[in-house]
Image (cartoon, rainbow, N blue to C red):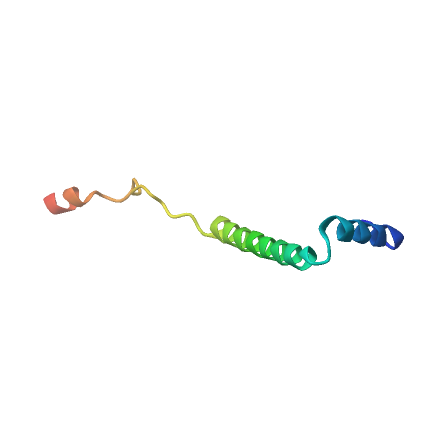
Length: 70
């Protein structure tokens, strides 16, 4: 991670490349992207943590037709 003079040099290069008017737009877009990523991560974590539900009937339970015949 850059620190001190390295960070200042990087900020000056970004300012020269994009200009002062575009920096707030870029920062806003970056912030929105980070928020969307966090939302997607939270949804994924909820899906992973959700208990699994069986999609097929359990073999030990008698079928409905068998209960009617008995």
